[in-house]
Image (cartoon, rainbow, N blue to C red):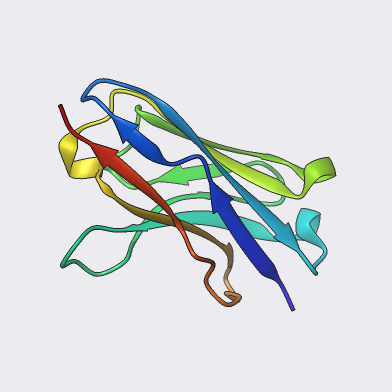
Length: 114
């Protein structure tokens, strides 16, 4: 049973940066593609970025060129480096493995506001 723990969220001003972390346990992490998702208040959860086991990356158009997904297999951790943050990036951010998702973690909240 995979357990996912997200961290690193907080309050940041527009144009600021944050780095989110997600640590996975209970699975062979290095063999799984991992993804970040987010859910803004009143909205559906949406996909943000994916990194494959081989390191290939894909991004939603809304975050391309601002966010970078990476992974450290030795630490069973996937990261989301976020730059040039906008108010519309405000959301609860989650990670999960793909394509067979595990139970969702508690997420980490990102608030972009002046």
